[in-house]
Image 1: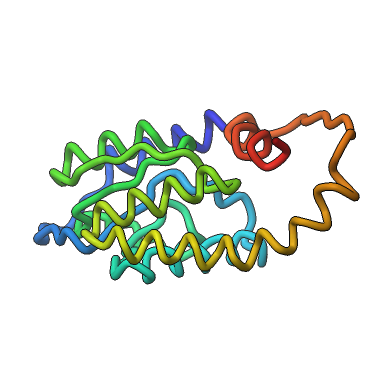
Image 2 (image 1 turned 90 degrees about the horizontal axis):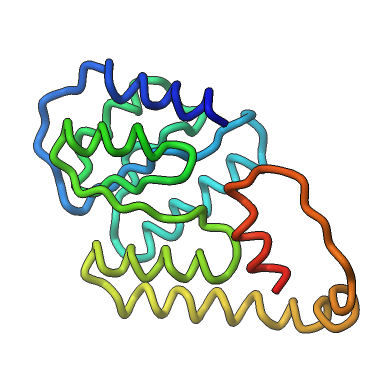
Length: 176
């Protein structure tokens, strides 16, 4: 994890960024963990784009996303840079270099963090009502499916977790 963060920091520090105007409707994410170019990671990116689209924001650059290196340059267009745990240092450097607003968020893992994301995206876009409607629609789809799993599969079990420390808050939230 340290190596991943330091690689992103090095990119942010050394890249030659294009001189372009920042756009408040454009957002970059710095610090998405892209540990392999497989469908689960791609699906995460699809969901993030769907969240942004729901409030009229354009996700212009994701560090990293399996996209061509040139996509990283588009972060210079972003009015807001969302900083994730894997890229906090890089996001700070990039925000200073471009003048973008930096917003530190947790991973969008679990209901609580995902709802926080939508609240913040609503604030950035000025479309809080649309963000709230998105959350309500998603909860309306997810909660009924969980009603069976929780009492019959999840109650009264012990769980141990050995893994990525940045994912622990989201996993803990889901288990609670």
